[in-house]
Image 1 (cartoon, rainbow, N blue to C red):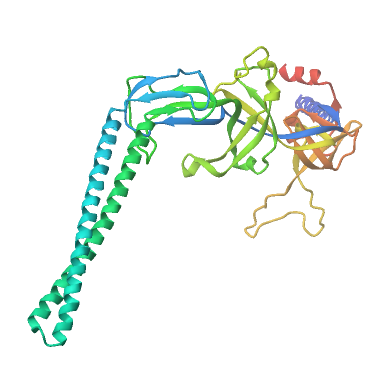
Image 2 (cartoon, one colour; image 1 turned 45 degrees about the vertical axis):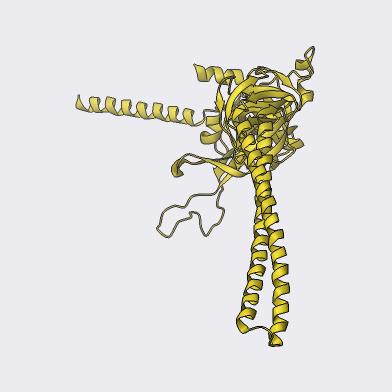
Length: 442
C-alpha cells in the first residue's frame, strides 16, 4: 500500500512539473501587442510656448508736475484723444502766488542792482579825484613842497578809493547774478503755472483714470508725481510673456508666433517677436529659483481684420490685461523624416569590447551606462532595436536625422512597452490602436 501511495505522489508531481513547463513555455512565446507607424516625411516646426498679458505697445502714464486739487477733468476712461487735447486742470492758486512772489523778488533784485551800479559810478568818480590828488602830491613831495604826512594822507585816500571801486564792481557782479537767479525762479513759476493744465502728449485712448475731480495730487518738476491717468495707442498691441532660461536661447527677434487669446476661443492670431530682455527675472529663493526673460510679441493687425469689420477705425478688439498664450516658432525643418515622439526611447549602448564587458568605477560599483536614442523596427513578428539620431521636434513628431529610411515600420505604442518592456528580438503582434487601447481599458 505504501509503495502504491508513493507512486501516486510521484505521478502527481511529474504532472505538475509538466503543466508548469507548458505554461512557462507558452508565456515565453506570447507576443507583445503593439501599434506601428511608418517613417514619413513632413514639415516640423519647433516652438516655445509661453503665456502672458496683452498690453499697448505705446502708452504714457500722465502724472502731475505740481501739487494741488484737480478742478477740471476733461476726459473719461475710454475717450479718444488727440495730441494737444486738454486732459485736466489743477487749481493754480498756489502756483499763482509763487509766481507773484517771484515777480516781486525779481523787481527787488533789479532795484538793488541799479543802486549798486550807482554806487559803483560814485566810487569811480571818487577814485578819479583821489588818483589826481595823489599824483599831484607825489610830484610836490618829490620837489619837497609838502611834508611826508601830507603825501601819506593822499596816498591812503587813493588806495581807499581804489578798494571802494573793486568792492563796488564785485557788488554789481553779485547783483547781476541775483537778477539772473530771480529771472530763473520767475521762469520756473510761469512754467509751473502752465503745468496746471495738462494736455495729451499723443493720439490715443484713455485706458485708466486713477484720480477724479476734487482729489488732490502731489508732484514736482524733479520727480514723478501722482499718477493721474494713462493714454495708450490701442492700434498696436503686444503680448508680454516670460520665457524660461532653457528656451530663451532659441528665441530671436523677428520670430513669428501663433497667439491665442482667452477672450476669443478658437481663434488664432499672428505675432512677431519685437523685444527680448537682456536681464533675467529671478523668482523664488535660492533653493527653487526660476529664471525667466521678458519677451514682447507684437500682434499683427492683418491677423484680426475680421474682428474689425464694421467697427470704427479706432476700435481695438483687445483690451490691456487680457490673457494670452503664444507659440513662438523658433526652427522649421521641411520635408524631413519623422516619427511620433513616443516611438523614440533610450537604451544603454551595448559594449562590444571583449576585453571589458562591464564598466566599473574605482570603488567597484557599476558606472552609469551611456544612454542612446533608439527605436524598434517591425521585422516580421519580431522587433529589431535600432539606434537613431534626432533633430527638432514639435508636440507630436520628432525629426530623425540618421538610422532610418522612409517607409520603415516602427513600433509607436504603447509607451510603457517601448520605454521599458521591449528588447531586441522580442516577439510582437501589430494591432490597431482601437484594439490595443480597448484592451488596456478592460
